[in-house]
Image (cartoon, rainbow over all chains, first blue to last red; front, side):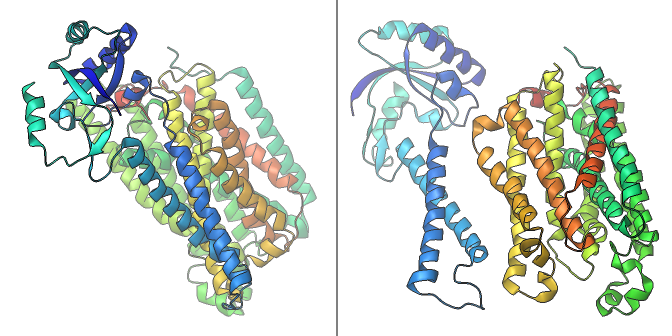
Length: 194
Length: 402
């Protein structure tokens, strides 16, 4: 990915964060992301993020599970190895339903978890830049990308005017890299003192 | 802000017309199905009173469960299920009259077990006679109908009384506490009646030799999802007339989720009942499904599954559909009709010698009950402001976000 420059502001109140997001967007600055320690309802709409496609993916995984279960079982019991079980027909649909249901749920669940991890770039040994160590604790962190058209000092002043508490400038890798969060402690200390 | 409902003239006319259709059908049915044909007359009534009785009771159950779960989102439209639930006492009287007429009027083609002589020569029925006898039936009926009506009226009265309070923190606590206690009492009664014995006595005993432990829950699921559909219809209607300003698509989304989830819940119970019987393949159990799957009722049997499972499953899956008023009205009407058909195929086969007739009589009576519910619930809605302004969870409902 790319190394970019950011102006980072921290907020300690949802009620301040929401209008701030709105003002920053109206002012035309590019919000890289907002990190919050807990899910905030409606923040995605305020930030103008598009609706997630995770549920569509889930539907496709589910349908795949249904098809896999039904086609495999019918192939086994009608073509490959027909068995007489309690005198039931070779294509006993009611008996297939529970397994079909379970495979649908299994495919949908596992598929969606993996897709979610992929979308959030979460995996063991995958590391991303953390803008503020307290973003998983009690602060909401807004990172604004500094493009060639943006004046960093101006953004800082603007963030202060909309109610941000700690404001600093950071140069950070936007993508992920191989690494472990427990290894580079100095990284955190730097961010705290900044 | 419009908060005081006034029944529009068109609403009133519609309800009276529907009620008149019902009464006319009742009259025609009375003359067409007399003497030896009276079985169909009473079976049609039995199907409709059980269905609409339990569907209106579902509103009380809705208030009960949401209160016990300390839900706040439903407060802004809580007066709607309250108003529908106030139909319960009237439905209880009608149900009492119809069921007593069947039991004591000697309708043994509906309830075989009312014929004493027959029971004596029937080993299975004589074993069951401690439970399936007119006295027990009557006592259970009076108790359940009485308790349902009592709790429903009590919960409604408390809600209306709370409007006159001047709120303090202590009164708020008292409000939540006493609602919780009374709703818990109702849920106990409800689970012991609708969740177990009521469907056995009213409906399963039509096929008195047959038994299924899933039956009550399956019946309950059927009426519960239809009850939610009725609430949706009333809420959307009020919304379209400019009432309920605090209800928006967030609340509809949650009601839509209920419709979606409990349609699947119904299917789960329906299938659990079907599959166990299909698998074991024992004659005394398959006797119930034989005429339904392989007899004249085959189309009704599969229609039931399509309308009540496949359509809600696929239709309500998308988020935007659950937030769309028109779509919710469409699926609610479909679900109510679908579960009415479900009740039809519970009652009709055993009471018509497994012959399928076009249910004009049953439909007419059903339309009459729809009119009755519209009329009574509409009247109840006018009796109080539509927002319970003193409920401490009201704000939670106003800022509700799904």
